[in-house]
Image 1 (spheres, rainbow, N blue to C red):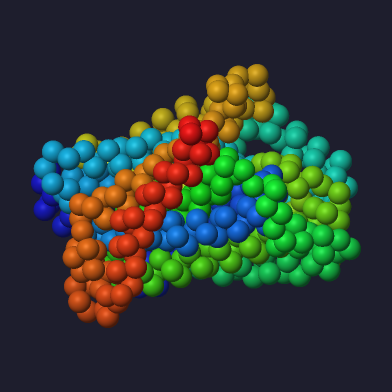
Image 2: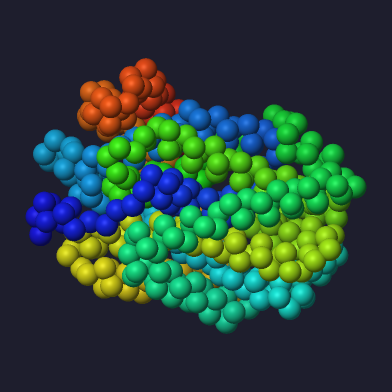
Length: 455
Ligand code: PHE
């Protein structure tokens, strides 16, 4: 199929608000509610947060803008986009191919965390997890993740749900869902923060989150913070390029990216403020790892009237936020299979799901059947996370920045960011270009080399 034919039939976001909501829907997800608090807790709190902020502003935001601009210009999946925009025979399309691999790796563990969220909706309804007793909430989580049948079946439920939504198509499926429910999640998080801040040891929790202790910072934690910044904004692997390809030509790209980044940061911070005061008050371990949110959140809800009903709502909304992110992750391989391999949307979705059921099961069984199985000292769940967030996404970021900074060039970037001269943002384009050409690639490279102990 020629490029012309494929672009003519492409789906797209129908309105400016739809674009913002869907992009936000990709960015906001378990990264905010699950990953951000657990990594911040495990890596020393405020110092990690500070590095994460710097990484977001100096590196992730410019790369996000670049990705969306490339996607919108080419109006195609990441592989076709880079083939179309790069000079002949230069292999920049490999960024898209690596993105497809990253998408499978991330989805393999991400779908399992979504599975825990789904399972927690039922646990919340039954009331069995609502407690501030550490023994109770830890046992509830432990029994879920160490049960191979529950872990697998819930993951299949998640995959089937996502597949169903994806087959409905971009505009209908993603836009409708995210538009309506994001504000509700935000409100509920604000309520949780208020409750958490009224707890005995709220001060300690806040100090942990906002008073940096730089002795906790190592090269490896800096790489983790950078990887989180990429993961959070769904960049470095073609997701934002794919979403950019659905952007309308009159959409203000830098403004949209900035809004998404800010809102995403707010949600992460709210999750942190909701969790750490409770962690200290109820004697949880800040470094509890992936379990942190699942053991702490029920304790916060146990402190409020109607806590049980609100906890049900919380996990439902979290599941919906996670759905927006999961769909955007799946969109990368699905669109590549559709546009490059000529599969129908249905077949592309079904093949992606089939492969995911296989790769994902290794993560679902990490705490049961495969608990003794490690590679490079990491279990499959942690390995997939490490390889995607700390290797592929940052490396993708280097190459996207280099591509725009040295190949695509300033003129193209300026035209893309100003909507062909209709927006007056030449200075901003200059700053973004400078960051992409010099700062982002070098910074990412240094952090990766140091963080991986390569020099
Ligand atoms: N940004 C999403 C989240 O925070 C995860 C994600 C990563 C989505 C990469 C798409 C691509 O949950």
